[in-house]
Image (cartoon, rainbow, N blue to C red; front, top):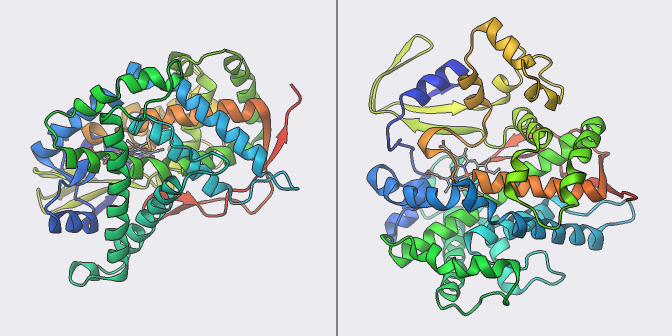
Length: 431
Ligand code: HEM
């Protein structure tokens, strides 16, 4: 296995990618799917089987106009989250278990673009079915974390964690199937004129557009989107809020940009694109707190990395987007300081530095991107970014966010998560 966190090597790998890049499946999930003779899902499939589904997913998830259609619905999710904060704030103006609250917010957001409906995770009393789905998701992440970072006894024995994962995957499958069947039967469409109504009209075309995919495959795919989109997005939100809570000047500058947008009655996704400071804050947070640690690949040809010949096929390569490169003073001046402005200047600090050390913009860009690289890059990235942007817009227009606990660092399990519970103090702004 070869680990690298060098931007130059990352670029070489990117340039050598094939049309269907090979990524080793997540072993425990692949085993369970094999036992049941089921579709492996997008994350776990390779070759033409992967491409057959991925090209359809790209149409729905990666075209800006397709994503922008949901901006208003995502803003409504964030407004509901605001009400959730108001309801649950304690005497210190903090929301107990705020990390879990963020999971509810991201689950609700994922429901909007995956199942095309509001699931009610932020309601005063969410229904048992939704509580079970959220709980199921936590169990899937927990058991996967245990299985992947311990000795692989699960390959030979039906371990406790393997049983837990099998059970949780089945429960999540059943719930997702119920939702999809409702959409297909046109039973559960929001009332006429509501924001989701128009999107629900295209629900069936969205589900039916996976024409070459049989029903059980659709369910596995949608389950996968729900699982993949929750902890990743909520942990990213926690890091973003932490970065802004610890840098009040940046928070204030962002608030000025945000206020304008929040005054509008409806939100146009294109507007979000033009919010340069918001994007710079996102990028800077991703640099300091990488949302995901690595993107593994396997190549069918030899590659030369850092002067070493890596033979084809058998070598399993992990790109490590770790802080050792993202916080390296060789690549970024003052790397431990949160400076969103470094992504704004015409001739940025980063760019001047890159000229000094002869690293291309592309390689630094790929290295600091949290969504992987090339053809297999995360298909949910545009939805996630839109959700994060709308969360900040809604929160910062109404609250000042502060953090008064031990410093938060990045901890890695299956994805990155905050090393401390992300507990923020919310102070209502006078408008
Ligand atoms: C901030 C949030 C997110 C982060 C940081 C993230 C990160 C990643 C990364 C690093 C990969 C591996 C890419 C590679 O191998 O090059 C990936 C793959 C994937 N992500 Fe995300 N992701 C996020 C949100 C989402 C959401 C909302 C969805 C829901 C659709 C999603 C669905 C997937 C799927 C299905 C794959 C596998 C893609 C494939 O193999 O073709 N992710 N993600």
